[in-house]
Amino acid sequence: MHDTLAIARQFAALHPEASLPCPSCAASLKARNLDRHLAEVHQLGPQATLATSALRGVDGRAVRVLVVPLLLWCLAVGVLGLLQTLYGLELGDASGVAAVVLLVAAGLPPLLASLNLLRAELVLGERQLELRYCWGLLRLQVALPVELEHGGWWGNRQAAGMHQHEHSVPEAVRFGGYLRLKNANSSLIVGSRKSAQLRQHWDGASTGPRQRRCDLALDVTSMVALQYYLAARGLLRPN
Image (cartoon, rainbow, N blue to C red):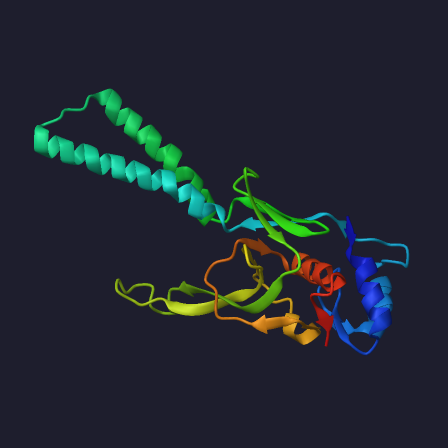
């Protein structure tokens, strides 16, 4: 269990002139004003805690796994179509119903993932982080220490005023920011739709290229909690 409030207060005491994110709302403030901000804005006194062992968000990794059954279904349909064409193979009504059922079974999970309806959690351990995704069935472990990289999380959307044009070209837009944690064996990309202003508050992360996918999308306060977790392990330092 990691107490984000306790970590934030420790850094505020050690670096009173630094700018730090509020662990409760992610607002940027002078470290010496942290306790007053917590008390006046959030009614969090000296004994208050924000303890967590895991951060939960949108599963961005599962779709790469869940699309495999759909691709296999498409391959099977293609093979059956080829057999029908070459050898006159006839399929009964039961086969058609089975094909539809399999299509739904194979297509629904990646559809849910693409609509950001699946959840995943990042377990904060003492020696590693573990992403539990795809309904908790799969694991991605990243041992500490890690190298940190941050940058923009980008995607495509229809250009304004071009919705009626069939061949309009999508424009690249910034969704938010990401933090990549990597070592020699594994890599994890955590994104947030609202920037947690890592560069404004911390040293220790290099600037990386644009990313178009994230393994886990967190809200901004959870991203701040991750930053304090990494700072407590010496991987981030106040500016």
